[in-house]
Amino acid sequence: MDYRKKFVVEPGAKVRLSKIDPRFKGGHESHDTAAREIEKNLEHMAKLQYLLYADANQSLLVVLQALDAGGKDGVIRHIFSAMNPQGTSVFGFKQPNKLESGHDFLWRAHVRTPGKGEVAIFNRSHYEDVLVVRVHKLVPESEWSRRYELINDFEKMLHANGTRILKFYLHISPEEQLERFKQRLDDPSRHWKISETDYAERELWSDYIEAFEDAMERTSTKHAPWYVIPSDHKWFRNLAISEIVVGALEDMHLKLPRATVDCAEIRQKYHSAEAQEQHSHEQHNHKRRKRSKSER
Ligand code: AMP
Ligand code: MG
Image (cartoon, rainbow, N blue to C red):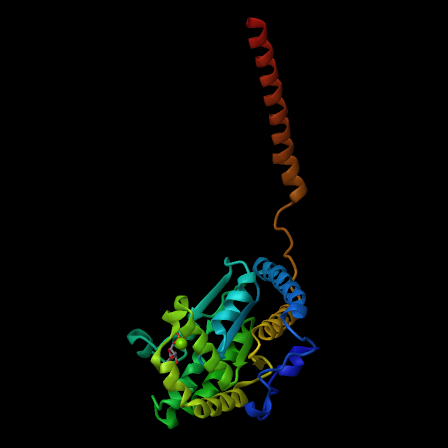
């Protein structure tokens, strides 16, 4: 199944998250049957990232958004860990600090975008400025409502500079969220992840859904599409995202750059000399051994 086609938010289309099943599993019954496919995608991703880095002409920006416990951290750990840390960056968007809030809302995002040959992963993103900011009325509507267009212009500019943009909304059900919160409570090694605001934010579920639907409707474009990923099953989420990332990297038609030097000449110049050196070195050692033997 082509998950890019299946889960993409077509530009201009209405988004109704209640119509999308967060428990969707595709043709798979369980993680067991999907595991091989996920593994294959990860291997493929690693190879393509190597080409992206070597080619150093284009870049990839991945935006991860979700409600709390939606699985953003899990996607980074399980999927993007397949890539070489050299050439990859992850940035987690927290409440803006003083320096950040002294600038326009895109400033902190812009400095974290990938350079040529790089992959950048946004754990939350500039979209928080039309999500949490809207839900909690941190700025007036007259301000946040203008941001969709500013975001579209920003992403268009990045795309024009050779950056592919993939935006994922990890779609979980409220029941699955509560279950994940409970698992955190039951596991002392994950207690640090729990905050009371997580529970308070649950009360605002429908406000967040509305804000997400609006954001995706207004900012899913051909050059920076949103994908709604059914994420109640973590393994399915990993399968779908890894496949979409592989597809996007394949579309970049990445190739190893041509060598900038004459390899045959270099081999002849340095390595044949090295072979000769090695040979005379061995001969020298041989003679020495013979000499010391006859001296004994
Ligand atoms: P976490 O992802 O659990 O580390 O939490 C980060 C927190 O920062 C979340 O509650 C976000 O909603 C919040 N956050 C991120 N960006 C912004 C922003 N632009 N304005 C206000 N809060 C934000
Ligand atoms: Mg949190």
